[in-house]
Image (cartoon, rainbow, N blue to C red; front, side, top):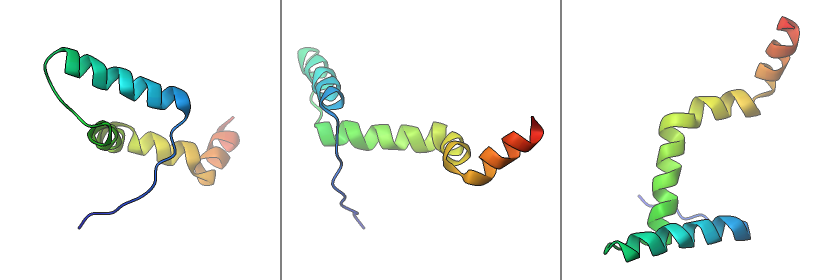
Length: 68
């Protein structure tokens, strides 16, 4: 099943993705910006998911304050 969601990028994010895509093209490869976005989401899930839970969960902020 495929889930579609509109992603809002800041201009500097779009420019950075375009630069990566250009460099890949210059090296003889091809990748769509959508594929770059999908890969970056997977990297985030694999490596930073737990950090996101801690950062955005109010219970972690309260625990941190109570430990101080």
